[in-house]
Length: 111
Length: 105
Image (cartoon, rainbow over all chains, first blue to last red; front, side, top):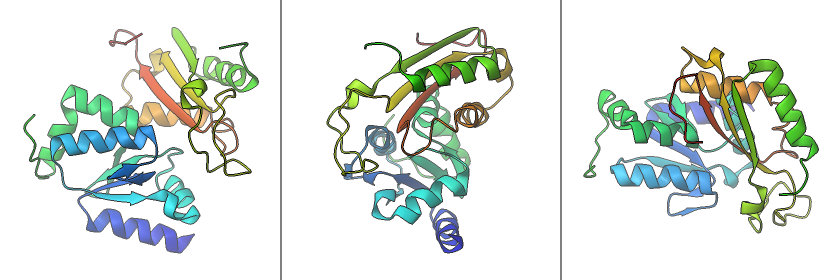
């Protein structure tokens, strides 16, 4: 479990935007994960999608890493930002866009 | 949906006890997910849509005032930790609000 924790920590530290999800950005296997993918793609943010279904250890490990029981989980600059409900609320309020801007994350989309 | 199930009843009791909500709505959305692949099932099958697998909790409570979105979700997840076990509720959508904040219900 410690190894999984280290692996996750490494991923969120070395990638500006990381989405732990079920399935992949190209083929989400869960409606909640799919919603976050749609928002990130709409904004034109570069991110790394990590499929938690690829490993039971990862699927359990990510929940313990963040003390958050559900997936998807979005991390920006190593910090947990939220799950589907929170990301959608932030997006609709314009807060997700400003969160990316404050963290110097390029947003290429129109919007 | 038919009669209220045991998980929904337990969630309602715990949310009322913990948050003393002004408004509370628990929606069983399991039927919307019938046919979805369920990796947690014993036979690696699909959700049949008949059970208590997918819920939406809408809650307005004074103690959410001054709490961040993440703090609100954490408080609710924590209150419902028993129900969020892997073999019970599979997915929980949460719409928390403090009194006076806009809601969509």
